[in-house]
Amino acid sequence: MTELDAYSDFIRDRVRKDLEEGTYSGRVQTRFPPEPNGYLHIGHAKAITVDFGTAEQFGGICNLRLDDTNPDTEETEYFTSILADIEWLGFHPAAVLHASDYFGQLYEWAVHLISQGLAYVDDSDTETISTQRGGFGKPGIDSPFRSRPIEENLDLFARMRAGEFPDGAKVLRAKIDMNHENMALRDPVMYRIRHSHHFRTGDQWCIYPTYDWAHGQSDAIEKVTHSICTLEFDTHRPLYDWYLSKLPLPAEKPQQIEFARLELTHTVTSKRRLATLVAEGTVDGWDDPRMPTLGGLRRRGYPAKALRDFCIEIGTTRTNSRQNIEALESYVRRELNANAPRRMAVLRPLCLVIDGWPTDADGSPVVEYFEVANSPDNPESGTRQVAFTGELFIEAEDFAEVPPPKFFRLSIGREVRLRGAYLVTATSLETDAAGNVTVVHASYDPESRGGDAPDGRKVKSTMHWVSAPHAIDITVALYDRLFTTPVPGEATGEPLDDLNRNSRELLAGSKAESALAGTAPGEVVQFERLGYFAADGETPALFHRTVGLRDEWAAIQRRLG
Image (cartoon, rainbow, N blue to C red; front, side, top):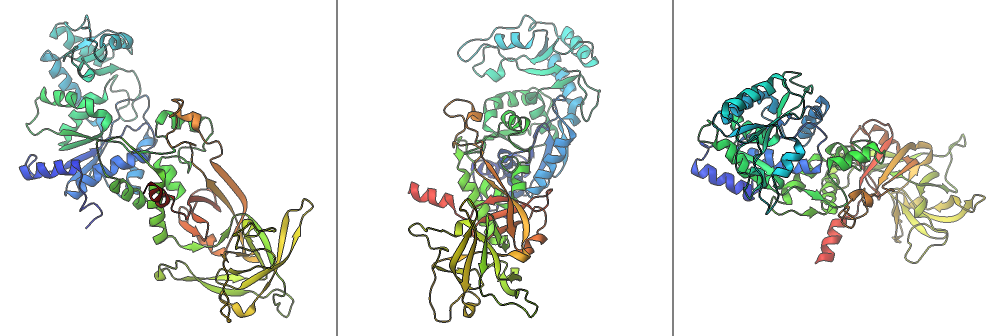
């Protein structure tokens, strides 16, 4: 049984009904059809989960079909990354296909429509065509080329195919209704002339189909049953159905179903605006951990299962909404809490010297080892040996020279527990010329080994630590929201106006226990008391904070009642 088996929504209800009625002879086939002109983002994760998950739940198949109909923007690199992202999410296409596989058939079908008087070649430029289409409540105007004879249209279209005309000189349009209330049906463009090299077909073609023309016909060729799209294609469904109804196809035709895309607070998924962030150096690339791309989320340490669970459990509807990013983080935190090993690291180190710590015969400090669980909630994860000496690193914020009210961590005269080791009491401190604390001295209770006092006295704070002689140097990247407002651009109309210019803080002098050196690239660990951190896949000793330990979504839900 998979995580999808018991799931239901209006799309799956439609599929169940079709299965019960034998609409497609018991078949379920979907497809995920991205254009290979960019990197997938969190919104695509929702679409992938719906497309592949629906097919999986009903024992069907889902193909990956690259909509490679625009040769000017498509590259092999994008295709490779798209396939890798889908497989990382845990899905595997039944077949990897391309709209360009069907260029020949699409051309023949276009000729069929022309021969039936249902398409014509128009010499108008883009601006003129746009003007002639009119607007909502404003009728369109027939193109002067709309009444061209069929034979002339067939001749011109063949000459377009042969490369006789320059870019923009002519287009092929469907002949439907220039006064239709649905703007998508006002003689839409089917083909444009574009003398561009295609990354798969080379220079075989100089006319390329529009998405609307390629979409439904590709579905029909592949025998797709349920063509699932996001809601912006809702008004295009009548056109989808019109094309299919005018072609010599079997009676069993695909049906388009639309759902609301996934949007998150504090981020944007607009390709143009994300490209601006990359081009201007605001982020380090498309896989920057602050980016909503799947590459960025993966690099930040988001588990694929957390994304799948989130996409499934928020539901699939036809109502546009924006999900709280804190909700996604709660799924990430839940998954990592169950699987991430624990390690100790100190982000902003302060030296703690234990006065009176024993030495060996040669005068060197004694090194003790404590057995610490890799995951207290998962005994099967085992334990590790952590070195402890008389010189440690603690978090600078865990010591207060003048403690504020309700501060229970280390201060002069206060006793705290060092995680799994000893109880210590701060006794004195050292400062630099500017008055900054550089070293804290402490005494320790040798009878409290393991962290508990034999007399049963209690302490109010437990702190993590790292043995100074055994520490490794790491760099830590801390992240804030990429945008300062939940809905970027809500006030001004331009999301980039709300960009958080301080969304990343790099800490180059952090320290960690030696066991962290064995962390594999991409692996996520919990830094105790600090959060979850992912080892970078390229830069050694760089760790990205995935999420903190505090469940902010639970707090938001409590406030909302």
